[in-house]
Length: 504
Image (cartoon, rainbow, N blue to C red; front, side, top):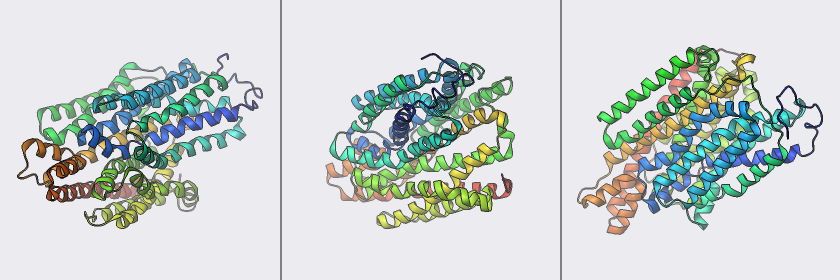
């Protein structure tokens, strides 16, 4: 199929092609896979910790490798599609994601799993922006809103499906099945894209700047690495401090380079717009909280409360339920009260839920956890949905593309830092409270790696006191995480209430 630009598209032949709905179905399958791949691995982390001996830091990297690469490459990947063909790059992204999934399923150690997740992040960075950008070539304006809504719903639906599907797979198959489930759906997406999608380009889009891309990836990577390694090496260790300094230098170089370009890849000048900046901050905090909690909670539900993998996935649903409520109810509230009131109130609810959750003890049981998870999910969703809409509404029409790319990039960075920072706080607090007195050196070291490892050591030694200590230490770490989430949410709520405009 010949390549066309958005201005050259035939008015009827493509848009009325009955195959367009089949093509949309393939895109939906791809977005669904990417959606649940954001959360499917979280429920598998305790299993991987037990079977592969993954420490807390390695579990953080398993989750973060995907998000860091996705955040660093999403914007340049979208520009590659504009330049060299969106269908071509979309198929390439799906193929890379497929290869990463196969490698992850076949991996036999944690390092290879982390590498596979990073490769999947490269593929996802190509797919996420391009799945939306090909829609104008398929649908007329009257149908396009519906198509965008269907794809967005598929991506959102994947989030709660991830833990449930992952739990079911882990109960019936080996841990690598959480990767292998991607293969048939992604293969379907590739086939449909090849045969059903027209090729489109936008030669006028900004060029991909390899130096800025490298600065973004290395700056974010250095920051995440420093945060993850700090609990083990120490926050004042020379390597830790050097990585923080390197990250600051790389990000500064990125800002200076992008500010000096006529057509920047990352339009950082948009951050000078108060409405965009503060709403982006609220949306980023939402991803920070969600990603951190999705890392912390499965180990609590599985190791401390004793649920199996499927039971853990089902018990995470209250955290996600708010997304479906907010999808329908958020906009009427914004119309009536304005985004400032809705966002600040939702962040206050999130802060309250986190503080309520910080009162959890090792003997609290799931009922109390379900209560504060439901409140937290509602607060998170009613902050995120209006914040995303208000941030995009604050952009001038001629910078909507670059602004939405910057917003998605910053959101993903929030998720990566959430896993790294909240996971590091958890590891530090857990290690400081765990009682390993009287244990042999190797056993004490293994127990300090994670609560799952501590349970395995306790079972091997017949030491119920170690099990109780590990549970108490883990809940203490979760308390620290929730208090940080509560304070961060409350501070952001106050900033939103004080500084956001009353109306869009």
